[in-house]
Length: 95
Image (cartoon, rainbow, N blue to C red; front, top):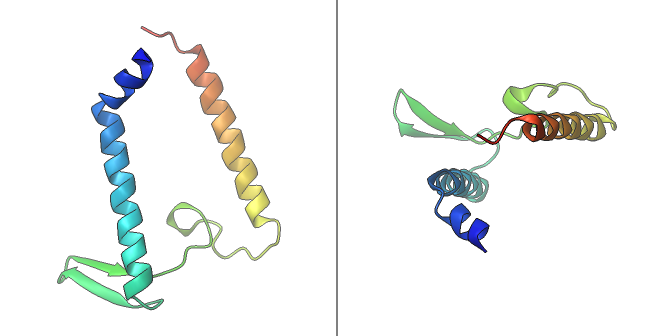
């Protein structure tokens, strides 16, 4: 019970939730309002939203690879990263 209360009081948890919600909302709005390839200027000359589909990973890496194995390879890489991070976190002293 105390752990749950402590988590709810963690400002970083709320910050992460806010960023996630903002990201989800902007993606949903662009999906509903824009056609693929269409752009909207938010701050003319500085910031524009362009609706694109990224079939790769961050920054379009592996975007040009057309393989039925791509989702499995990327999932395996993510799973390996998760295991490495978990093992590292388990070895870090708590203080």
